[in-house]
Image (spheres, helix red, strand yellow):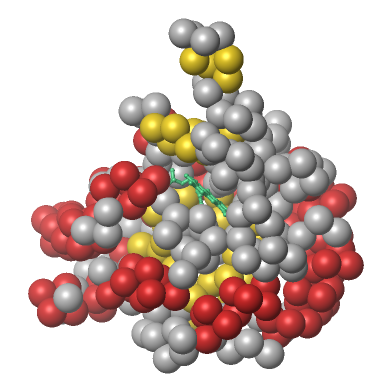
Length: 310
Ligand SMILES: Cc1cc2nc3c(=O)[nH]c(=O)nc-3n(C[C@H](O)[C@H](O)[C@H](O)COP(=O)(O)O)c2cc1C
């Protein structure tokens, strides 16, 4: 990272009282299930990491096949497999003292579960913030939350009451008015938002005349959803003054700049890592440096929100 250390001042992001050395954050669910891998992601250049979404109790997830590469993006129906909160916290314990913020992604099937999660995580200082996943499009009991502003506000309020850390709410694109849901999250006390989770989708194997995924429906990610995600970030930041983490289809420095210009505070990378490995961080960071230098910007702060200025 020595060659990148010199450009860190141009790329640093300060938000939620946290310092990210650059705007590239690992998205939830991609490599985020074990401590050694999270450590490698940070060593590869990530400015921060979001873990796999974790629930109060262990969960098996959906039967295979759960992921298919469609070429223009991934279709997944993992079903939120995870070891449960207590077990996962033991795993994260070994990451104490790392230089990049660790954001714990959580989900809950009820507000009672959120109360318990909030209490348990409040004292756990390995984790700097919590991302509340209300938007997984292929798990019954979760996908419905993100569509209902009353539920979103109430969930966020409950978590905030019992958790002494910044709360980021991860929004779904599978709604008719994402700004309304974003407002509800902010009214409930959200400190930041992530836009977007995957787009509900399906694919059919025409040889056998059956859905490709065992769970029938899944979430589409990757480059195909990027314009949807950019639109969501733009719409939210046009209406609300809240930090937004842009997520969806980012593959290059050009894509990151697009999200920043749409108003994103920082971005999250998912499918590009699943498909291209951890070297993408350095490649994108160098691309960001080149973009800023070639155009005479002294930091990414000068780029942020540019598309809103008329
Ligand atoms: C295999 C896979 C697993 C995922 N698991 C989660 C998860 O556990 N929690 C969550 O909030 N999002 C999850 N996501 C969604 C990503 O975090 C991200 O929002 C989405 O993939 C869009 O970004 P991308 O196009 O860069 O992948 C998952 C995505 C994929 C492809």
